[in-house]
Image 1 (tube, rainbow, N blue to C red):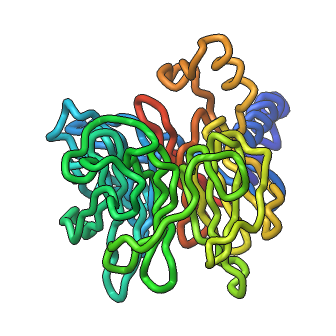
Image 2 (tube, rainbow, N blue to C red):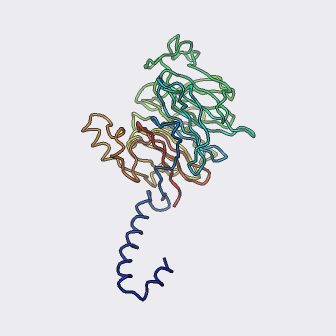
Length: 359
């Protein structure tokens, strides 16, 4: 820019013409940023470069592996059993590989976890799939589990013969939270509303929660995460989505706190001193150690809620022409990479993955 100004200094007319262009450029750059204060990000809604041989369907969750590869799972369609449900990209959005046909029509949760020198994927699938699985990063199954019948929360045939049936006695798992001992918690977010605990081998151990509005009970416990920002007192954070709240629990599964004021919180992740909550009602919130919101990313709540009222649903999720730059429609999951950049997966019919790069 300084070289251009020196070249133009002797021509008043050209400088006058260049001035508005420079100002416009500055405004355009500012419009490419979401957030505020110390939490500002450049956004890129077209980050992922999907080959023509595949197509986006309803995107659900996203995970970043230790090597920086990004794993995206979409629900997919049971009528297309040969189409993969999991896409893999590098940090620049270049397509790497695809797999996961067995989850088509039910793909939901995905997490990447390093165990020793290897990285594994954990997948939760609902609808007719009704399963959880541990995979290699190439898509090979390490183990696969169905409804934990021994918990006594499920219909008798739910594990042996899973079908696309919903209800409080059905297994419709959504997301994972990992524990230091290698085990994990699993949210049955659309089924029993219980949180199940498993050991490091994927064996069911116990459960807590269940349906209800009182503390320690849930209405769609959709996402969860182990919050270790205070290492002396780690907390399990549960996104009690239909109640528009978070609930926290200690490692003895005792309720500690309820935080209200969210718009269908869907999942959680942490980085440094931040807790991130993607909210299905058009925003991603960043919270400090005391669960106060310090930044809001891509908020478009009023427009989305107005559309819901007018259309008696979420019609805008199926009309890409109405999506706005720098604004979210329905964030369903979000995760940090090692540098604090963010990937957001939205619950929209044609799929959308946005990369937010720290400004």
